[in-house]
Length: 329
Image (cartoon, rainbow, N blue to C red; front, side, top):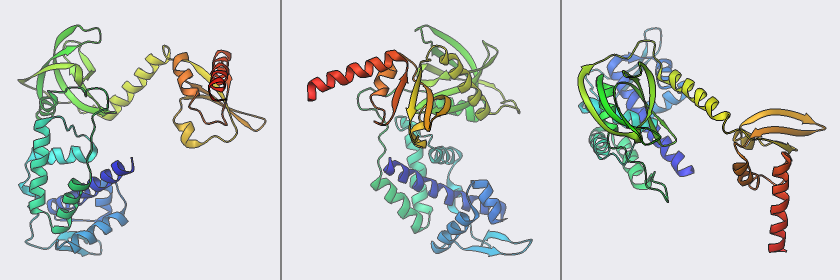
């Protein structure tokens, strides 16, 4: 995890430095607080990045006062303009974590963009990119199962980016197949799984499609526009709530736990239904979804946590302890 986090920070740093240069060049002059707001970081971080850029040989000029700001020396042009739109999109998506290494076309575009950057960036950045390639390797494939095949993610991304309708063949949960004309509104990645939010012309509403169930994609000539009021983040948040509500009735198994001093990191990993304090002890009612899952999880609880209810689960723990004692004592 530490290595992946270090890789993420390095990628974010490189992307932020690229973004700073592009913003300065496109606007001519920009204030540090405007850069910080645009890149969602602190002004102090912006000034540190500016120092790094200056040390790397980028001729940056800073001026104070109402009309001041950060600019490039007159006549200097950032060579990042040679990157085409697709390459910039791939760099941006990779910086956000939207990468899909199994997609050959996407990987080639990303590598092409990185090669161009290596040739045009100052030595300090080239060293960062080279080091990142040499010391980090991200293997997203699981140990035992084959990864989901997503042959048409690039076509979906292209349809979304160009505002083109798409005809898909979709495999339902029950195995049945249907053909639908869609207006893609956005792609979401959740724990390695890709989802497409799109207006389904057949259903007459926005729906969510799991990309691994899309067996074919055909780009249509018809164009469309995403409604001005549509928010992908807002739509996804509402869908998550609806999904959880629909599953909660089917996957509800409340378990009461007694803790002396609850560890926030441990508690945050649980779906807490209710909290109470009884004579100094903290009582948490948590959802463990089913008796079978609860049996598996309670044996992994820290030793200072006691299961109070349900009785059936307490009996299971007692029986397990007796069996373990027979084996080890």
